[in-house]
Image (cartoon, rainbow, N blue to C red):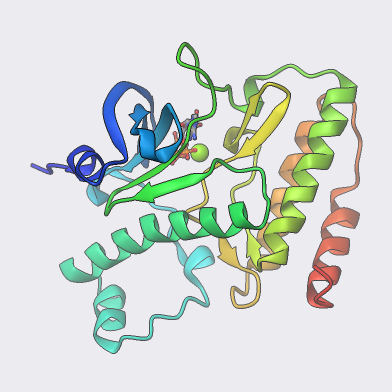
Amino acid sequence: MFEDTWFDDLQSEGYITDVIRPLKSGKEASVHLCRGAPSTGEALLAAKVYRPRAARSFKNDAAYTAGRVITNARTRRAVQGKTRFGREVEERMWVGREYETLREVHTAGAEVPRPVACSDTAILMEYVGDEDEAAPQLKDVRLSEREAAHVFERLLQNVEVFLSRNLVHADLSPFNVLWWNGEIRIIDFPQAVDARTNPNARDLLWRDIEHVCRFAARFGVDRDPAKLASGLWDRFLLARL
Ligand SMILES: Nc1ncnc2c1ncn2[C@@H]1O[C@H](COP(=O)(O)OP(=O)(O)OP(=O)(O)O)[C@@H](O)[C@H]1O
Ligand SMILES: [Mg+2]
């Protein structure tokens, strides 16, 4: 039986004092609302806790891991051979990578929850919402055309910030954007890819932009995804982002 020590780990390190309640339980992770310790500067925090590997349908297929470099030969063989050690490494890579990506894009000014800490299986970050209710996903929000146009521009700007850090989110959709007090917060980064080394990065960027355009079109905002995506990609290649 898998015993996760995420709460003890984050509490003993002085990041959280309590779990208030579970917020969401998804395929890959469950998210809990926690009380932040004073040193974090946040009254409320969200802990995203990854499920044990066996219970999870990982998005770590070839499209996302292509171009990934594992420099330690023993580790590389273990991951390729899917040994138990390899699976453990892969698991920690996934959590660590989401945390590092979040840090990178947050520092660059993207509209994402502020990352606070991580353990082997959990990421602790700024919570979007208040004590009574968590922020809804953008897919469940009704917007005016004006608001939708604003949200659309914000999303595109954030995609540019990601690219300026050589990153493509690769699962950007109204499922992974939260809406609170008229602002967006983009979440869920474990599958983000390096635009310089992943051979599918252009296609993944294209798909992200398509999802964003389809969302905006629901509220009467019509934009051409092909033109936007190719414009962004060309600028990335010319290193202007
Ligand atoms: N920082 C946060 N503040 C508030 N709610 C959050 C936060 N992070 C995640 N959530 C909630 O938890 C849900 C799942 O988070 P996330 O998208 O990162 O995980 P996931 O692996 O995609 O899970 P799922 O399989 O459910 O899609 C989000 O849709 C959102 O409702
Ligand atoms: Mg998600």
